[in-house]
Amino acid sequence: MNAPADDNFDNAHRGFVATIPDAEIRDAKGRMVWSMRDYAFLDDPEPAPTVHPNLWRHARLNAVHGLFKVTERVYQVRGFDVANISFIEGDTGVIIIDPLTVAETAEAALKLYRAHRGDRPVTGMIYTHSHTDHFGGARGALDEADAIARRVPIVAPKGFMWHTVSENLIAGNAMGRRAMFQFGSSLPKSACGHVDCGMGKAVPNGTQTLLPPTQTIERETETHVIDGVEIIFHLALESEAPSEMFMHFPGLRALNTAEIGTQALHNLCPLRGAQVRDARLWSRYLDEALDRYAPTADVVFAQHNWPTWGNENIRFYLRQQRDLYKHLHDQTVRLMNRGLTGIEVAEAMTLPASLAEPWANHGFYGTISHNVKSIVQYYLGWYDGNPAHLQALPPEMSGPRYVEYMGGAEALLERARADFGRGEHRWVAEVTNHLVFAQPDNADARALCADALEQLGFATESATWRNAYLLGAQELRKGVLNIRRRNISRDMVSALPIELLLDYFAIRIDAQQAEGVEMRIEWFNPDTNERWAMRLENATMTYLPGPVLGDATARVSIGRDALAALQMDPAGLPAAFERLHGEGRIGVDGNASSVVRLLGMLEVFEGMFHVVEP
Image (cartoon, rainbow, N blue to C red):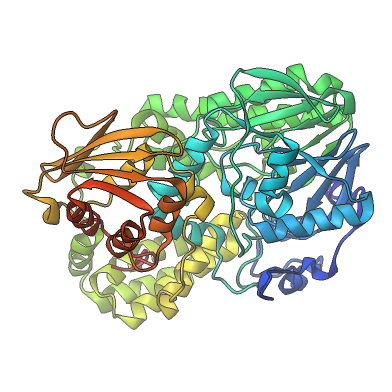
């Protein structure tokens, strides 16, 4: 490791003002939302043998918490959440960049800031992009009624509301379960368990909220003045998020890279799942930041990790980040065009020393391996071109056959134990996984597969890979924990456009129940004046904007409050609809029972489905 030994620790502590003990944050009922207390084991500078030395160091850097002065009129609270909250001091108050993941952490961060910088009113709020850790704490930092009364601008990039809601809704159940593996939220915090998330320490357990933007950045670059502060907004769409932007503050000589430039290699497709991101475009945005704004910047700060100071250091950092994503893109595509598959590219890809050595290019979050596979997926999709893989058997069907071909369970385990002793943990995890899917109750198979996954977790530099490996091992040993998964927030549900509501209904239709049923239902939201005509036939739901032409089975009028109440009611959609209709909060012209029948066809997803076993 040739990265500077001290610069990052100096930068992570630079400008420290104050903190609260263990960064401990509780909700109104006294429940723990966030605490650094359990990470005290990271105080030891000597890496534990169960954690990659580089990851141990990175985890210690991310454990630094409190209020920090970045430069004149720019402050951050770091280590109170997986993300950072930034404060830009204006002429009359303070502008907030990204109010964290939950209301409780945002409120605590603002309280700490005000304790040391005065009780300044919030005079603006900026959402850099459409991921929950950058807007979910909005109501903890800004009261909606006060914001409306004072006309506080809430600024977001183009497409923010659509992508905010759609990503958390359409694939939300699968993505949420997979996110448990990416972030390791149910792992014990220890040198044998959770140590970090790469972009920050962990995800807080609090109240997610959303205040809708009042102003959207639509053009590539727009310059606005908020509370006397000149801000150049630069769109970075389809990069780290489908809706994203970064900002330059020319008067403050400060550049905020949002999440396109951080202190680690990022994901081109996260382990939780998402649409694959464009590495070429991502690099282009970093190049534009370097070309247009770096010459007049003395500090670059992001919404994760710690800042970089000094114009020469800024230029070096942005060049390295730019070339990191471009190199991965270009060399992956080169090898792909030689005929290599994603798996083969991942094994072949190495970075030149000039890109591999800088600390901010290390794979603490994303990795070279899964990023290059993502690039291949971006261009070529899931199929590797080999017809033998065109219709491969699912693991429940292939597992028993692999075991049979290998001479049975005992023969497989005997050879796998020998390979484990030789340190071939990747292979042992792969082969014992076949046995787990063939014989899920085979305790020896589960134990050996768990041991192999655990060793892979201990060895990896990536926090997210570590979390995934260790949670896989934990579930093989203890089974799937009975955890109540967090639902989509009420604010997000109430912001649903009718189109997305119908998208969500459509992907939940149980085709067997819907077979032979035909309906035409008009959905109207009086708060937004949206009107959609929905049709159910061929066990498929389709819909177009506008009224139902001709006879409708029913016409439904549902406002934002009723929409939120419908989705959040634990009694389920059919019962909730009947109650809200009976209370007059949902209007129905026509056959109300048909709407209840439709809602009864929607599957309720199991949040804690199996991943490492059938």
